[in-house]
Length: 113
Image (cartoon, rainbow, N blue to C red; front, side, top):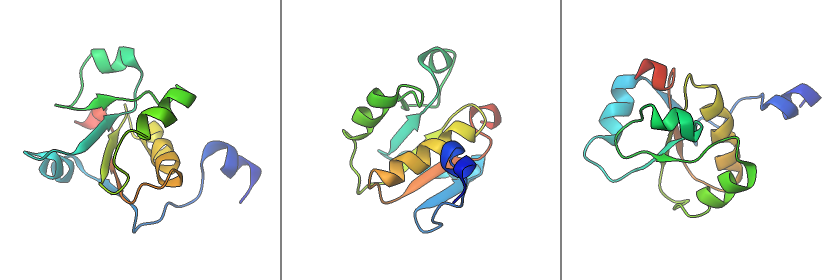
């Protein structure tokens, strides 16, 4: 892996553990279920609007990001989204590195919601 890939989170994520869902599939997956739905945008972005019962864990808050995810169940899927899909993909990599088994990402982020 190149230095830039390490720095910017390049490389493919394991398709058995990571999946990008379009808006309709994402909505169906979280509808009427108790899921771990996480908005990884900043608190300010979250306050301007968010999806249903999403909790806010700011990707840019390093230590808080990690400690907040450590409170979640690693055996249950995590549904992530950000503004456009870039941060949530990077967040997915971190979450999977922490030992979570399955992560779903909203294609196009909240902008496409």
